[in-house]
Amino acid sequence: MSDDTVRLLTPEGVRVEHPEYALDATPEELRSLYRDMALARRFDAEGVTLQRQGELGLWPSLLGQEAAQVGSVRALRDDDHAFPSYREHAVAMGRGLDPLALMRLFRGVDNGDWDPEEHHFHLYTLVIGSQTLHATGYAMGLAKKGAESAVVGYFGDGATAQGDVSEAFNFAAVYGAPVVFFCQNNQWAISESNERQSRVPLYRRAQGFGFPGVRVDGNDVLATLAVTRRALERARQGEGPTLIEAFTYRMGAHTTSDDPTRYRDTAEVESWRAKDPLLRLERLLRAEGSADDAFFAETEAAGEVLATRVRTAVRALSVPGTDHLFDHVYAESHALVDEERAAFDVYQASFVQEV
Image 1 (cartoon, rainbow, N blue to C red):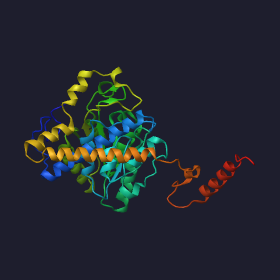
Image 2 (cartoon, rainbow, N blue to C red):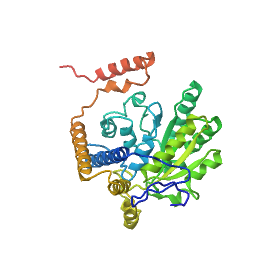
Image 3 (cartoon, rainbow, N blue to C red):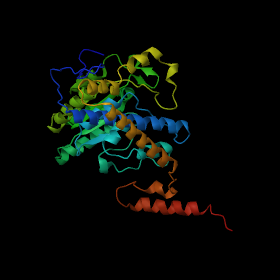
Image 4 (cartoon, helix red, strand yellow):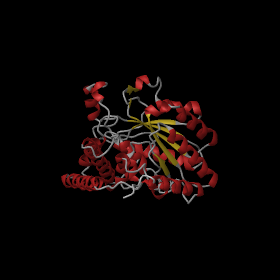
């Protein structure tokens, strides 16, 4: 990790000063950050298990990226908007979305049918990088309406190779859009390492488009919160976009369809396991006397309750009717969609056999 990386908490759980970024977090806030990360990790583990049991079609694990997601989402205000990729489970939970909604998507029950306006958390996007354009366009719209909100667009290091991301960077810069580009650099685009993706640190790409870029220790929830908070304030004040590169590590597989042992070393994984985002915050909490064994046991128990609830609910999910395809195409009723729905009903009825 380069020396210009922003860090406020070392892997050993020791606070460090940074000349530009600071964060005063109370013991209660620190415990809350830990709890959010722990619950997200337990939920994520349940997603992997359910997929292995055949209950889900696929699951992209966030293991190792909890600090990047929890720290960044905590910086958002209620009126801000988040545009995720497909691995932002902790961001979804941080915006108040019932995580069961994510599992409905990966079970194939629906295509992600939560209301983006309810939690200002937009739909998962599996088309790599395209959500950065959506985030930029939405931010431009907010600016034109005179809103004081900001937008965060999440994507991974692999997405930076997509033209969509460069187009989003350029539009955001030219129009001064109130958007923060949040790149979780987990160092592997499926089986492609960083070295085969880019010859310069990703955050430096922002300079070429005319806006600032910052690299933050993505396993440090305190630094991630401080850096994202600053970037959002900058956006709200009309100073334009910022690129944040949260340098982290994907400790699990890309998805449950991937076998990372075929392309990366065990030693590399173990070296990052020592930098575990939860472990370093636990060390800080214990060292400062801000949490005891009872707190960690209670948090673990809450995770088990969440996992049990989700597991039970997933197995009980029913398949929606085929006419569900036409719901929510538009926010309001639309004559053409109504016509298509009626035609589809007639088509479906043609398969009913006469008794």
